[in-house]
Image (cartoon, rainbow, N blue to C red; front, top):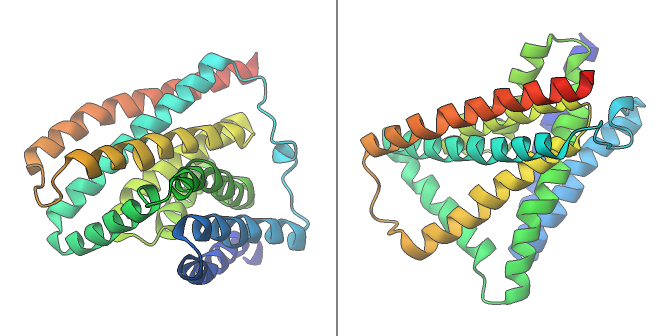
Length: 263
């Protein structure tokens, strides 16, 4: 029972440490506060867990890509983008179904604008780096490089993937994004299991954050009226478009990784 609970205890500790991250983001510019939060409160908890438990997964020791072809990595990156789009549309639908979340959406949009559109150019660059480099590396190290292997020792693959995804969704503490981010976490956990390396998950996470966490928000801030919400029917149409593509890329990536691994 203790072995089963350890990764979940580590998750609770990491979530608690995010309170310190809020302090960093108050004392420092948001961009550098986010970087420090990722390093100390996310990567740091994973590193401490591995050291204290003497539990560094051998398959992730070198962070090597195990003979994955470039074409497979491109499929993984594309899968990350479309799974991220699916997450964005699902979050938008959630907000429309639960109007009380509009205040959360407004606060999130304000944070994104401060992060990506500050007055100084160097802060804008730092914001992009925080989102596309620090977050993918640190979060994948904790969730897929530390918690997932510990979960797999006591849980079946399906349950470990689902639980890991749910932890990832809960970790961001954003009610409008819990379900979509949980799906993203399951995707990243699934591809990590089949590659036995963190690099594909980091790649998918980075491309997802670049497209859905930087490019699309900047376009929205520039051209979309925040007071006008798209009709719910259009959001469902969009979900019906991106979901099959994301699902097919997800399954295709797994097939390619299986082929690369067996070859």
